[in-house]
Length: 251
Ligand code: SAH
Image 1 (cartoon, rainbow, N blue to C red):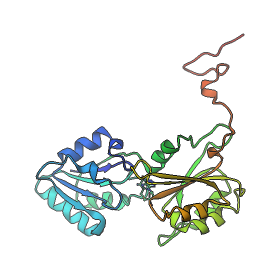
Image 2: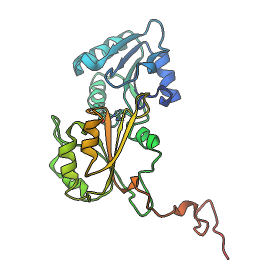
Image 3: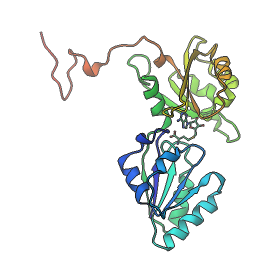
């Protein structure tokens, strides 16, 4: 059996109870060393074999899983944040299917959620935006043309950009094709880690601020008026708004 576990954004306490139980009982652990906090692995069994996937290719990862399976061992593959977001999990699941190896996926706290928590912001503010776009800028890995930053920016929704802070100048230029220059932007570096940093600005000054702070990776760029202070109060808690669980106050 192979379990894919989302390790959370960094803080080891963001690991789910289920994920922690699986890691602590695993015979083999393969983790993405570049982003997974090693603290997440501090209670593994004494004889647990731990592999850092940073220096391994897909075949090598699969070979470790295959060998463990042949010995009836349990493997836990640990991904940063949640494995459904840029986790390269699909190719592993499909390969395991071909090998008839059973698998299960346990979700994790993605960095985009840890970032909102760090900022104490809500991505979906009433009357501001009700949509969150999670994306990345094209780099060495291409992005489909219809999902270019310019295309997505047209919605002026909340946008969260992974894997893009290293290209902040180009990113800002592309965003400005639809978002006004005054649009607030926050860059969250290492959300939930002890060295977390949050840089606030607007489209006109964020690039300079990010460079000044020396942030080149492990950060999210969040964009939109959700960072501002204007919004409508939520209907959900409005005393005149009735819904299934609460009758409104009638005069
Ligand atoms: N599966 C992960 C994302 C992997 S892609 C998740 O759910 O979060 C790697 C990118 O995620 C990084 O380049 C960075 O943009 C972002 N990232 C990962 N951890 C982060 C953190 N703690 N703080 C800010 N950004 C982070």
